[in-house]
Length: 164
Image (tube, rainbow, N blue to C red; front, side, top):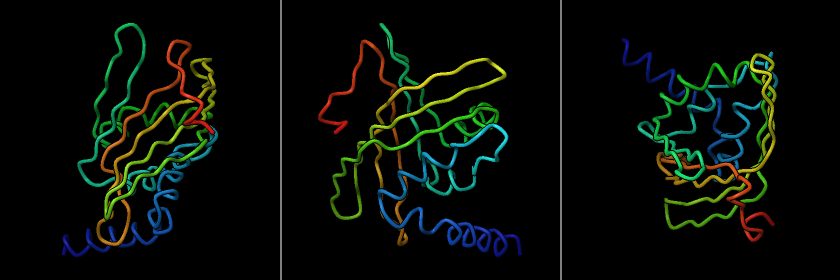
């Protein structure tokens, strides 16, 4: 009975967000918009989770003289970062896509813009960053298998050819 219930819930979740995973562009946009919004608005973490293949990973690079690489499962990311995003006015959007697809796999380079304000920390920022996605088309939909991202810094600028 539990297995039937879990299967039905997964199917309902998939159909609720089916449009998000119907194309590469829609999947990448949904990933950014799922956790964008005002601090007093509910972010859509179920939508976010639905985009990732179970076991998917996220890597972020914190630049500097000796860059730090953080490797997280999606579950770890949501557990650690959800409170910050939920209490922050945060917006992230696509600047451009570069998509390379072969059969049921694709790589996407997606420069993005962002801005945020967190009243609890009195912290605010805006800028651009660069995300690279690895995707797979499985079970009639696109999934994020892995992604890696880094924000632009004064020392590490995104080349114009990726931004226009």
